[in-house]
Image 1 (cartoon, rainbow, N blue to C red):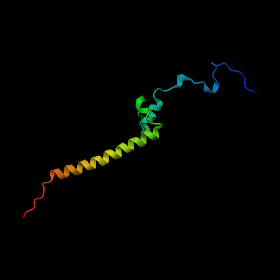
Image 2 (cartoon, one colour):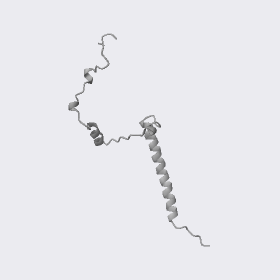
Image 3 (tube, one colour):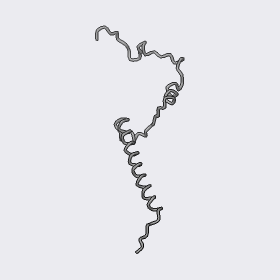
Length: 90
């Protein structure tokens, strides 16, 4: 490549120089907590099941919907069981 000086593998360009003496521990962590972000760490075997965070969110939303519908069915059958059965007089 013309116009670019040769650099060894260990040289870092000056724009990537970082002064660690001014670093603040947990700066971004605190900001994430303040903004209400939630970070979840998946186990490797679970992470393999999802291509990206959108796929994981979609699966979790489906599970929540299923749980809600199952809960409604459970509540209905519980309500039927607690009501005394109507007796027909003949």
